[in-house]
Length: 468
Image (cartoon, helix red, strand yellow):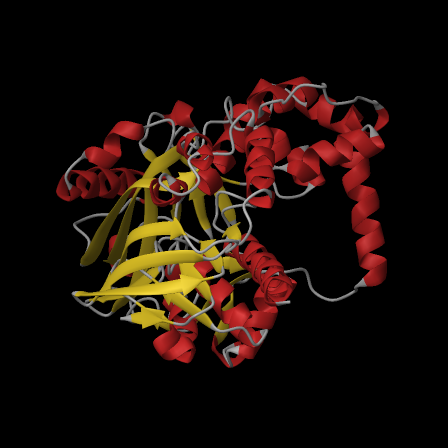
């Protein structure tokens, strides 16, 4: 049985859903196929004994494109924002110390030595330029500010956001804004101050805060999937992709199984919104040059332990209003396996029953790849014991959920800019083939939506030219 859809999106994570949604808004006929039984990829929300746990990302910072999407879906009223003043902590010698989030606090924090503080203070008055070659995040921080800033602040942040290794992560690919500041101004701090002053003159509104939805992040996934309707299908496995054999045709012939039935579609445009490894597999028989590049993208494995406790079990930070704070990050020098913990019920409402608190701890990453292969019970025991030692928790959690991903986050390691440039060149030479996903423009939800919108517009433009 053949379908007549003209644009096929493969992969129903946040990137694929957003791409299909934008194509629909652009008036394009689209079919989205997702191999698993649900949409969302790593994004999910589960209920456990009265707790609401987000699986995967725990929040997002809004971008213009993401705000537009939320408004189009009618979800603005479901948004909740975290208190931007909620304290963030760094573990140091077993104690939680406030993270220095402003220049004055950097100069007063016990997390940094006097020499590093002097380098921070003098950095705006020293002109420097980045090296010609790709530079790691670790090399950049040591060159500009010193080793203890790297060990106590930057490395924990890199582990928390990327689950990455700062010795391997490319500054230009993972944090391009920092390299650009040094290139343009000769000083990261001076450049950041100038940019902030310029931004404040243009917009005097509040700074973006971390957001979620009252019902959890799956609210966004469910809304897109529902409104796409029959144009988005789960349990759909691609079995073959090839170029049309018709003379002069640039179209694709795609075979897939949907609910146990073999179907086919002839499409002029293909969008791959699957992880890099899966995209490489699907493209191997179609455009083999993609495979070597895509298979070279390294991924970090991550384990997540969501846990709920009675507030009475928790010693640290307890008050009449319950535990207050964003959470904490853990430098590797502390000897713990938890990378960091988010205090969900402190950030957003309706995450935990009254008198309880919800936490999400992350383990693994590039610096502890082994732990993701452990049994869930062992991972939970490690996370709960370490969380108990940090927060002074007595007793076992009243609810918990363990999730594991062997390939959770793509690593924008040294040389990544050359790799993505090569992928773009291959796409330009492959009519009708487009790539979306978190391995291309950043792993955040906002970056994925931005990339999905661009791909959708490019695909719509291509189809218009193709039809012409």
